[in-house]
Length: 113
Length: 113
Image 1 (cartoon, rainbow over the protein chains, first blue to last red):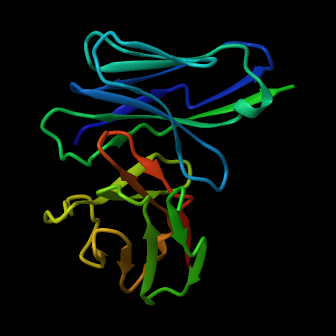
Image 2 (cartoon, each protein chain N blue to C red):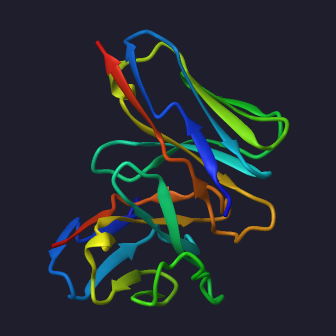
């Protein structure tokens, strides 16, 4: 089945540093989404990307939909303690079930004040 | 309500018992999804409802798992004869017109002893 590879699995950074994480797919996606999950909560949508090459920002977060349609990255600038959590990429592919988002395994971010 | 709600938040059961998990989606969101999240893993798609169409059950891991959605709103996920490997967080999500943008509930943490 289709797989999403998300990296890195975890990151330990100092407050104020920039963060970058990415996802790659074994096949084409037509939508990429990035979610953040806090402990005991469901994932919260951060950014949605619908077009190859699209670069979208949401505050200190920036995400891009790769030109090949097989990858996406998320950058967080000037990290703060509340950025701590698990970040998931998710994709929806051509020909897939309308509801079938495929998720990466997550990047666990720890921020040291 | 303003968001997706799920109940119970935690459920501990004995192996072999049946459990029912409930999801109340955002009012007016026609699509509803169930996912399973095991410890340290991404989200595994289980089932998807869209309006009055037949549900997409392609992600259900076995015939012990079933789900219903009554009146196009509330959904119940039922697991019969629970096994220890069913222990996970079960997440419900819904979406409206932008069907790839899914909004998640807080999840039900199921522990099978």
